[in-house]
Length: 146
Picture 1 (cartoon, rainbow, N blue to C red):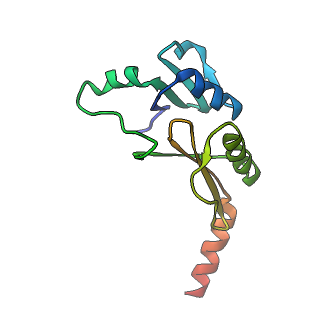
Picture 2: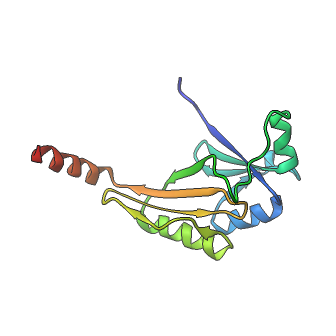
């Protein structure tokens, strides 16, 4: 199986507020998949988040489940790779300035650096930069100690 695109569906309380927040972070939206109930946020090539107002999101659940309150419960961590540590820092700083909150402290593993934030609805977004060349060097150094 090889997927060609990913659409992550997330419930939001106020679509206009969510769009305003993510626009401040530099995200854009596909107007073809945008109306008063939903929007398609473009994250990267073939990577999208569908932000759906809660009543519309519930229609996909068909009464079998309820929407989790993302302010108190987490079912998913949205992890996204960026091109540099600086880009990771910038998006988290922009998110906090736009009304989000930093979720946990930065993690620096040498080869991988990550930070995360909660959006206005409580969804956790983790942004990371991984330097695979450093990972290769780290693995080689560990192997030579064995």
